[in-house]
Length: 369
Image (tube, rainbow, N blue to C red; front, side, top):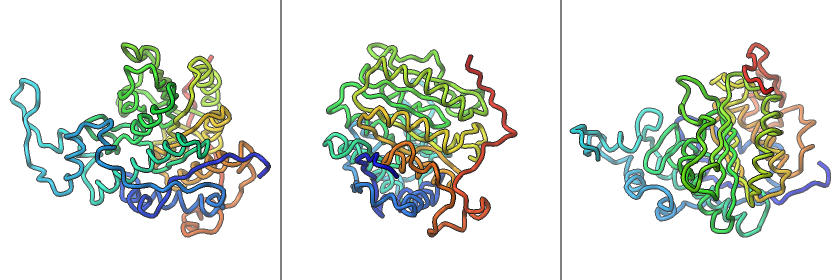
């Protein structure tokens, strides 16, 4: 794999994987991602970052006290309990409605353990970077970028991204946040909309009726944070070539102007060509190339997961990014077969091949002059 080698920390313990595997939107994904990383022998090349249960006080460094207190008791709470809204209307709602614990964020068995472990892992990754133990820290169970200060949203019950950024701010005055998930990183943007210390840059699908419906290019922050929020809304069919253009013409120039001391990247896999959303047309190689460009800046870098609903392709993507984080841009370029591991049979439909092509029937509606 050549002489290129970074010190990389990887958030892992059995409790973290078991908790993340219970997330209703991604049941079993964490185990599959970890198994493929292990199958390629990458665990031997990283330092394992233990993922402790974050303290309640740690969650409250960003989230509202009442929201966290309710999350803690949500599994046992009476779903019919009503609270009055804080406006002048006589409308009433249940606490689950108030805190967003319905529909796409319904309460599930193991919720509180999940929230504490995923957040604990991301904050532990931030500490790994703050302590100078390595240059890259990875938590593929993290990247829950939709959750608001006091409300769960979009499969996200806690905003571990904001918690990680808050922790990194203890040392770094300028942090760049890059969101490559299919969906707008609205929760992270909201957390730093008035801050000049965190530049949030989200590349996302934007269109009528597409969740969450935010992230216009005209949204630039407010107050002291004006100019430190950047959005690159995209249409259907985003290709590897279009993403490369975005990296070259937007992400790199913003980095050069902002001059960050650290970077956080949400590497959502739901823009891959075979994701059930079928909105973008990226390959693992194309999306990984964007992340590799960021890693070549040689800044303290926190890599997080996010969306990704084709679990085998998500495992492919995050394993490839992990390899390149450790061994540099040439690592993984010659991978052909999926190694033997517990989930090998799930790759049979692809003849156990690592790479997969884009969807040639999905045109790229994005034009960059």
